[in-house]
Image (cartoon, rainbow, N blue to C red; front, side, top):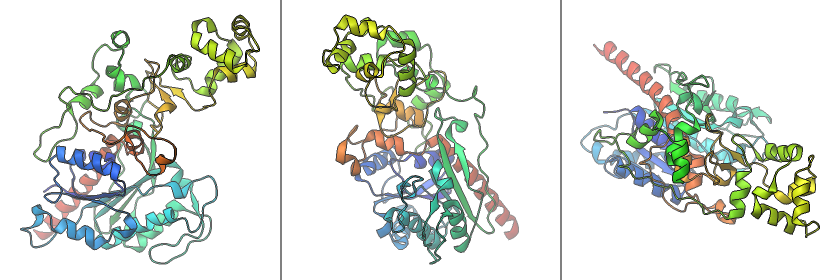
Amino acid sequence: MKPIAIDLFCGAGGMSEGILQAGFHIVFSSDISVDVEKTYTFRHKQLGLIHGENTYFKRADIRTLSSEEILSSIRNLNIFKDKDNLPQIDAIFGGPPCQGFSRAGLRKKDDPRNMLFREYLRIVKDIHPRYVIMENVEGFMDTKMDGYTGITGETYEDGSLMPEILVNEFNKIGYLTLEPMLLDASNYGVPQRRKRAIFIAYLEGEEIPAYPEPITPSESEKVSVDEAISDLIIDSKKKEKYFNKYSEYQLSSINGRTKSVSGNTIYSKGNIYNHDFSNHSALIQERFSLFREGESSSMLKRRIREEGINLTEYPSLLKECVNKLEEKYEPEQVISLFNRPPVDEELINALLTKKNNRYRYKKDSVSPTVVTLPDDYLTPYENRIPTVREMARLQSFDDSFIFLGKRTTGGQRRKVEVPQYTQVGNAVPPLLAKAIGIKIIQAIKTSNERRLKIQV
């Protein structure tokens, strides 16, 4: 049987997707969100991972999830019913949410989100897997905690670094650890510069695991935005201009990297799911068109100030400027003022929105970190924000991976809903998870071979 794993805080399934590609069988997974449950369980049904038969998903708050409930759920799977003893869990993967560990602002000693790491370690302590893999945001590496109390009751001094706390906590429950490490997804075939803090722990006596070596370390080897999404251009004329042939990455996304339980590769059969695009007004499209490739809002603002702009090419924006300036100037005057740099700040503010963090992807480079708000980015080809599928491509999800639920949401609903864009943005890139998973499986196989030799 394949090595068996548990995925906690699984989200829509980025980590799960990667470790399945690496060769694990996931016997239990859990998340608190009803929205991600729909996506996660639908995907697993596609792959032949059937709830109660060969896997179990539990929607739960980890604070109320007992280790015995996890083990009982696994023990009662049909694939283990004829076995006298439940095999030891080979690995637990997970990424406890990081909001309670922000670098900025006050870190409350009683912030309930800080308890999620304790709960994760509680389950590790009880289930005692051979390996533990935990991931988090880059900022976690230098986060300091005040008054943190571990699972054995030890209270750490104010200002203790979270990675040091984590290493000590693992040691107390019988685990050795590798030095925590930052891994950049773009080094592992993901067309995105996304750094994640990775922690690996292992039981004494097990083979010491290793972090994966980069497979696309140099800039020339990295998968570019163009190689990832150029085939998804919607406008036929622009697609004819910018898309020549399918890249290796695009073909892998279309044909599928993840195999089903039966060994068949799941592919999209020519369908492009989650590729609905926003119908932007003429005004918004003109504003988006101001951005050059690789240009951010602050760069755009500086360029217009220093170089000026010909507003006769942007009739909707010209009208908007005149209105915002309360008709202080005639249209001809506004055009003239924008053509005479340096352009006044009042004029620039009338032209642009207050949003300061928009960015147009650069075709021949990797994407910046995919986030949960789609309007932070623009495609390099069209004057629109990326679709869910385009963002999923930049995260290295297969095209056959379908995201369910609302496409997006806003306002107060963002506190409780997890729409498709957020599911994508919060995910661990599958190819990064795969690279890590392969190294853990190698360590498991080496340990197993050594044990067999001892028995012989």
